[in-house]
Amino acid sequence: MNLKSATEGFLKLGKRTASAMPDSQIDSKEKESKFSFGLYGLVTSLLLGSVAGVNWLIDPLWYSHGNILTGKNFAFNERVTKTNLFFRTKDQEKYNCIILGSSRVTTLRPSELSNHDCFNYALKGAEIPDFVSYANFLQEQNINPKIVYIGVDGLNFVEQERKEQPPISIDSLQTPSFLQAYLSSDVLLFSAMTILGVSPDPANYYDQNFEPVDFANPPVYEGQFYKPAQEQKCDLASIETFISLKKFFPHAKFVGYVPPRSAWSMINETYARGLTDCELLAFYKLSQNYDAMYDFSIPSEVTKNPRNTFDGSHYSVETNNKIAKILQGGADGDFGIRIDKYTFEDYRAVYRQKLRGFLAETGELKRWNDNPKISIDMVQ
Image (cartoon, helix red, strand yellow):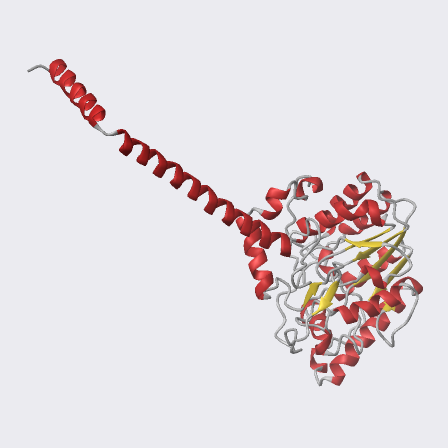
C-alpha cells in the first residue's frame, strides 16, 4: 500500500465516522460551545464591570470626581492627577493664581490664599527645570495669573549632576480616556491602596475639594544632631532661571518663599555642610527680582517644634496655613522673615543669630563657627 492510497482510505474512514455521528450529538456540542462562550463573556463582563465600578468610585487618577466612597484622595502620581484636575476645572475656576514648588509646597491649600483663585501645581521632586516646563504649559493654556507663588528650595543652588531634560509634553500626562482611567490594573491597585488607607504621603491626604488635610496621627519626627556629611559646593546658575519664569507671566506679581525646614535639618544639612551663605545669597538675589520674598527656614518656634513636621523637611497643613497668612501680608510670631526688606548683610546677620541661638538652647555651641566672614565654595 502506497502513501496515496493509505491517505485516501483514512479520509474515507473519517467521512464515514462523521456521517455516522447522530445529528443530536452535533447539536448538543454546538449548544455546549455556545454556552461556554456565553458564560465566558458573562464572567468577563462582570469582572470588567466590577473593576470599572470600583475604580470609578475611588477615581484614583482624579479623572472625573475623586473618591466618592471615603472622600479621601491620595496622590499616587501628582504629575498625572494634578494635570487631570487642572484640565477638568480650568474653564470653570478661571484660575488667576498659580503655585509652583516641590513636595514641601504641596500642603499649601489654595483656599487659604483667599484673595485669588489658585491652582497648586507643586509636585514631588520638582526642581527649577520642572517649573519652567509647567510655566510654559500654563502659558500655552492661556492662564494669565495675577500672582504666582514659588517655593524655592536651597537644593536648587547646590552643585549636583543635572542632566539636560528633554522637553516635557504636559498635555500627554492627561489621562486620555475612560478606559485608561477605570479599566487598568494599575488603577485598580491604587483603588485598593486607597480603600486600605495606604497613602504615598504619610502625613496627609486630599479632601473632596482636592486640598491637603493632615492625618490625625502622622509619623513622629525626632529632632537630633548627627555627624555632618561632606561639604558641598555652591552653584548659583539657577538664579537666572528662577528670574526667567517672569517672562511666562509678565503681568503677574511674583512672590517667592523658602519652605520651612526643622532647625535640626538646617544645622545638619545646610550649615554643617558649608551651604548657609550660598543659599542665603541665592535667596537674597531672587528677592531683588521678585515682588516679595520670604524665608520660613530661619529657626523659629515653628521649626524648633518637632510636632509640626513628620520628617524635618515637610510641614503640616496647619503650618502651611500660617504661611498662606503671612504671604498675604499677615504675621505669625517669629515665623519667617521677609528677605526683600533687608540688606544682604542684615539678612545674613539675623539668620546666623537665629542659628547660633538654637545651638545655644540645645547645648550644641561646639558646632558653631564664630568666624563672621562670608564663606561660599563656588563650583568652578
